[in-house]
Image (cartoon, rainbow, N blue to C red; front, top):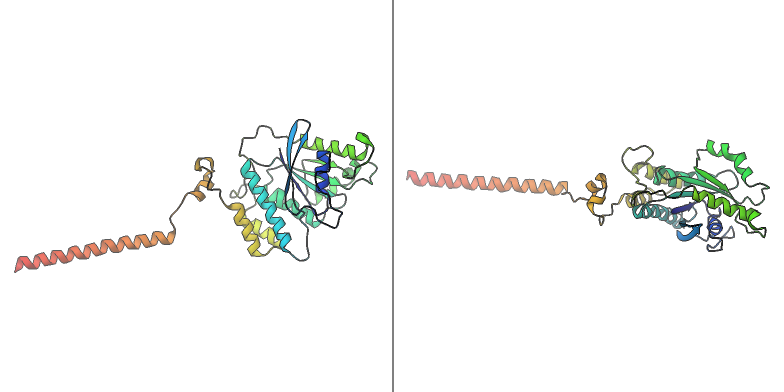
Length: 296
């Protein structure tokens, strides 16, 4: 099972990894320093189920776009592309701090769920930092309608805390572990064919973001330059030409099969035209010479 953790910086993605692993396998930030600067893969076992978890860099809403901000978005897009080629993604997990979702959270939801995955991959919400709630699940009861009004919809959710306690399975940390595990079990892969995963940019199919819309969204939502956005779009639409043609979709085959350049075709046509024109002139001259000799 392939699962991708997404969310803002410091929202608790690494703590969710540790919850699932039952151990401190992922470094947790203090809230100031950023621990995850590159996507990291963790493999954990939930009962008899093997889960590959990808912890992605946090995507914030910076006042000034930096190289690290652009790099984080490029890494996220590249991860989606490579996992799609390797067999697909089973679940997106959006981590949201226990408060009103920020603009950055809305944009992350759009990028991963709508733009890159075309709403074809289920998304679950994990609400973090709820250790001060008497009943963690009550947060969802109070805020579910507000979240949906902001355009955020999920297939399942879990309300958790990432702070360990000494209260065993009945404590908030123990209940958080159980809630996360139950969430994953709801989305176990059920015989999906190998290689069948998300397929971005397939024309006008409902729910799929077109290339121009992805570029526009990267510019307006994440404040990327037009050049940086175009570079990401080009990377997402690049075809793996090492794959046998018969394993590609019809659209990918059309892109992968070599086609003569239009200028080259025009030059070839001109060359052919002049070749036959020259032959015609030569033949006419030879006929004229023969006629002159015959009349002498």
